[in-house]
Amino acid sequence: MAFQNPSAPLRHASRVPAPTPPSGVVHVNSRHTSRYTVVGNHLAQHRGLTLVAIGLAVHIQSLPAGARIGIKCLTARFPEGEARIASALRELEAAGYLERTRERLPSGRVVTRTVSYNQPGAAPHRPAPRPADRAPRPRKEPRTRPAPQRERAPLPAPRRPDPVGARTAHRILAELRRDDPRLLLSEADVARLTPAVHAWLEREAPPDAVRRTLAADLPPGLRNPAALLAHRLTASLPPPLPASAPAPPRPDPLQTCDACERAFRAPHPGRCRDCRSTLMEAT
View: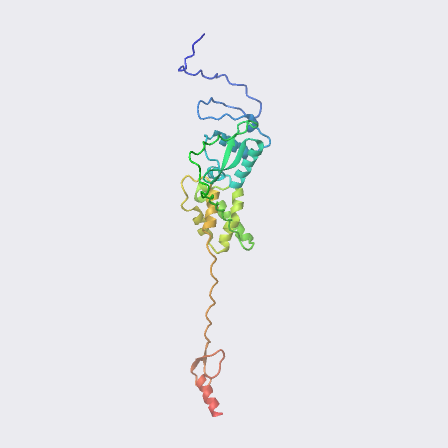
């Protein structure tokens, strides 16, 4: 029996080129020896899943056990928004690649347990039983309630339709990448954020000031520019300008008295007050 030396160098792949197909894709494959994930063609070529769902399933299968894959974590990692991420997770759950269950911890906090299957139809996951508490729990022990999650405030919207303002808002968002390449937005993100920028313009915010506010002081490692802009458009919305105060009444123009030729203020030419008084006393 031949003895295999584990320290011997690996045999190089054959350099004989494979026949090139007349059309279509040509594969150039290299052997992975570390940091790789095996994915079945039933997932990679699934006809019932969207590309977002397939890519998300591959990403989840490549993560180590215990990694967080909540919607907010995935939204911070990828450019897709929360709605597309949540829809992709529901697709994978319906296709059998994910299992999500709600579980209440002994502290009273409710958490979501997520199990990833690299092959749908495998035996369902059952959590391991917890060891029993050594001391009995008091009957009247107060249980803490889970802190309510803060709902995200809706994006601002204009009060009145204005095609010119909508076009200006669309142009501001589309041209942000000229200020910083990291602010490159998709067409869908521009359409979603345009009403919020329109609301700023409706409150008489100058377009240049809106652009500078959105593009200033970007955090390092920005991965989701659309989420950052949505937060700034909502949190920094300027108040409407107060109504202009009415102008003070203008004084009457100067007139020349017909009797004494003195100047006096009156809405129409005539006599001054003294001359009118003298005339009334004479009559």
